[in-house]
Length: 328
Image 1 (cartoon, one colour):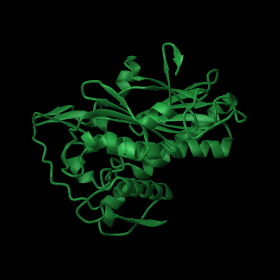
Image 2 (tube, rainbow, N blue to C red; image 1 turned 45 degrees about the vertical axis):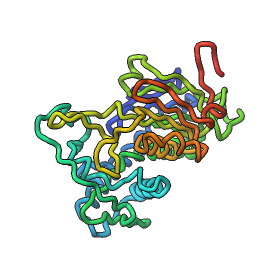
Image 3 (cartoon, one colour; image 1 turned 30 degrees about the vertical axis):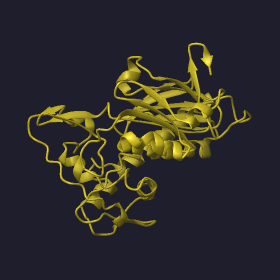
Image 4 (cartoon, helix red, strand yellow; image 1 turned 120 degrees about the horizontal axis):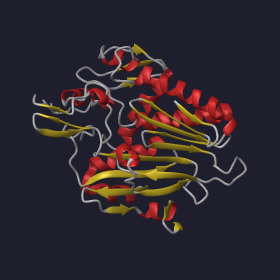
């Protein structure tokens, strides 16, 4: 973990991705970073599909049985089911077997970038309505397995941000692999905050992938007030099986990687997980994404496969983008 008290920034890796934490009260940075790391470790130990000892793996291994699980996993599954309800199944947590069959059966760092063996992509049979979860147990329907990748990082970002704010009382921003949650204003607790990004908010750089971000290939910068900002893309987590290019974002209607119009989607919402649900659903929906987002008044920025950027009306009105000539 890299901790920079002079700037109030800490960076490290968790959940198979990067984590950036920025706090207003720099004297709280070390405590905030430790607390964030503990929360993310708990999310990994309970919600990972790739750990045999996780609560999720134990539940997946006993389909049709109510398995005692952590409250953290209970919350993550409830968020995933709510996402499925809100998107009519376009964001589906029961894609675990389909992802494994496509080759994504271990942490992405261990997935071979190219394998000559063919991938067997079974027809996905949505069963999210049959997932049963209460305050203490989880039942995974027979013939399926849960994967929380569509909402997991955003859920983790929200959980980290709210935990730090509650326990340490400092305004902060945290990014978990590009899923961002801000609580409080960077100018301090007395500064005005709002439900939409504003000119006085936290600076957030937008990019397709972590590699693009590191190399300075960015889509732009916005100012984020209290709330969440999420980006989903089909440009990352890609691999080849049997000569076929695959990626991690599957279309639940077919069980195959989505191949729609959009390559990347970014959205703003009061919570990061809400923004993430919108971006994932938009990429899966494809041509109908823009109308779907506009109907719901979602602030979103879409990038198509030719690099053309399209913004919804709510994004134009509510999000402050920063260009070479300053905020606009």
